[in-house]
Image 1 (cartoon, rainbow, N blue to C red):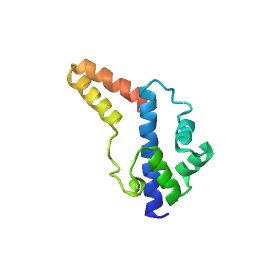
Image 2: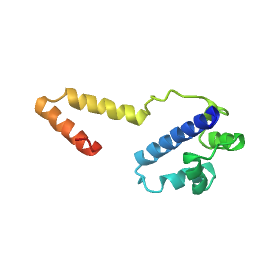
Image 3: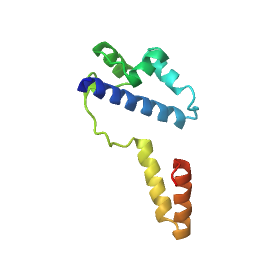
Length: 122
């Protein structure tokens, strides 16, 4: 698989994550967000599913996706740092750190146990 194919797919997933976070921040339920994103891009839900897994994103589709997501032409083609946090992820980490630092050892133990339970860790 070419680098441009992987880069475009990774960036498309970033666009979806941003779309989903904005929608959920306004109270939208997670169910149906993929279909809503496909509709916003003016593609079928089936095509979006294929893009996520294996379908390459051609130049015409890449420009269409960028336009509908308010990105400049060529945005999908640029490699991004893989470890970059979204604004929502950063807010969560900031909140978790404030909670951790603002409590005693018992509170920290409780926070850790709750997070481990949610994450399915032992």
